[in-house]
Image (cartoon, rainbow, N blue to C red; front, side):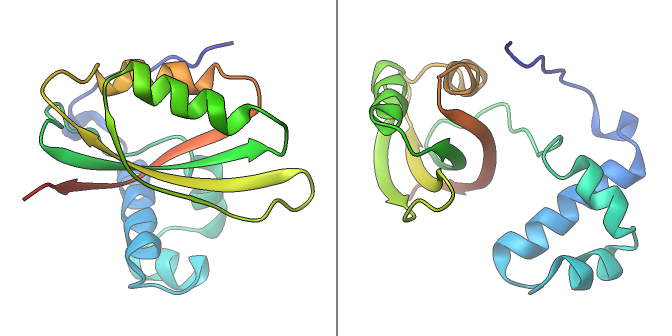
Length: 148
C-alpha cells in the first residue's frame, strides 16, 4: 500500500515534529553522536523522537540543480537494488554515488545520491515509486545540497 503525503505550511506543523527534524539534522551532520545527546539539545523526549523519526522530513519544492541523498533499508534479495536503480533511471535523475552495507539479518542499508536535473520527474513521484518496490522496507531523505 502506497503512503500518502501532505504538504503543509511550516507554521502548521506541531513543534515536536519540527524538533524531530532538528534531531535528524544533528545526527546526520555528526553534530550529535547519539540520539540521547540530540534530543536533549533540542528539548524533546527519546520516545517522541522514535515515534516520529521516520514520519517527517523537510520538503523543498524546487530541487533542480541539487543533489538528493536517500537512505533505503532493503531486503537482501536478488534484484532489489536493480529495481531501485531502474526507478531512478526512468525518472531521469543522475546517480552520483551508491553505497550498500553488507547485509545482516536479511537487510542492507543503501545510500544513494542523485542529481535532480531539469528533466527529472517530481521527487514525490520518485519516492512513491521506490516505496512501492518489493524489498524496500524504508526510505528517508537524508540530505539535499546545491550542485555547484
